[in-house]
Image (cartoon, rainbow, N blue to C red; front, side):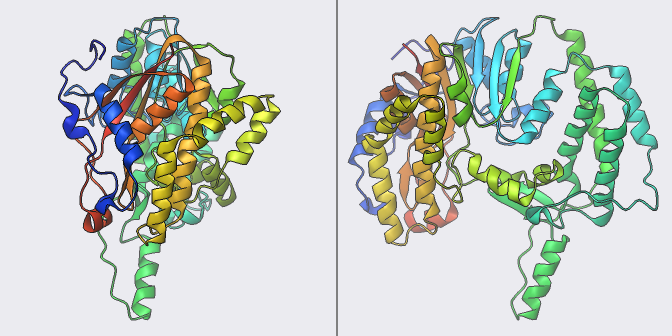
Length: 500
């Protein structure tokens, strides 16, 4: 094993080795066991690597990085550690194909490192624009905006409402719907700079969940018992002689948008003042591209990158278009656009349909059909994926998987990520390091080691596996799976590869 630099308190990784991939020995698991024995040798477990720095938790109190409430992100602390470990210098270029809230890109910018980032969600574009403008804001202008908002009152005859989609219908009180529309119109008409308008938009986005009857909860939105949706549901159940639902969410007194918006703007203005006083002028260039990395990466020139630091959507059925439905609806994304966006995201929900024909079309259009065929061979010849797909199919026949979309999702997830890995290999310079944060998963009693499978695919593409950093604290399983198959702890890892 290479000399440890970053997480230099190694722990025996044997306890993090999966002992049984198929509950009750239902499915074939010999290929997975063989891969596990091979890669556990480069697995490192350390106190320096924890759930706080691989998640949004640290960013909640982190200047600049807390500006977008993006729970799926990782911390600036993690990015800084990896940049140091990878010996990235000013003027180097780092890529994040799944930007999210922009942590990798913003840490790089503030350290004089150039970055390229992609994301398909419109919130990312707004957040990146707001954050990368931190040294350009006019604090006097922001104070004026805050003062104007304090003095704003909604006219009694004002009747506009913020738009909603099916998922968000009834998410706000009538007065709050009016408030959102009013402050949005005011911001659009306000005579201030575009970057300040964008900042106000971001602050409104960050307020939406707080002022709504909803709460983000993994795969969906939870609803407060006072919401129209829950009240109508309760009435319907009563009419049909059904017992009332057990309502667990009570958000208490909901703040008005005006107060939440003022709180957000005051908070970011403090950050801006601090950063403008302390930051150096030697910042890196940040190139953000709105779109899917799956289709945009093949367009870039080869040998551009010194490193990649990212976290893709996990293979955990979380639907970002539902979790962030309030924000998407506010930005004008209609029901039809939501459906289209859901299909364009990396396959990580049971509703995703296969993309492979569309990917092929894109590669042919770029005169890269040979590359497409080579990448597909790597996927089709991977015995680990074949074993997983077979086991999941048998589990489905046995009634152990309640939605066959899981089979399609898992297959599509690794298929699409292999195309990402192949493009990253082409884009990386010799010696460049690639770090992916990801979770292992379990469906129908079948363990899927995303970290080791991804590393195997990356190795077939040409990367050299360096290490798999694993958290000491392992994940649990869903209550349904534990009840039926027992508990199997799952790794959360950072896989690190190098282009020779």
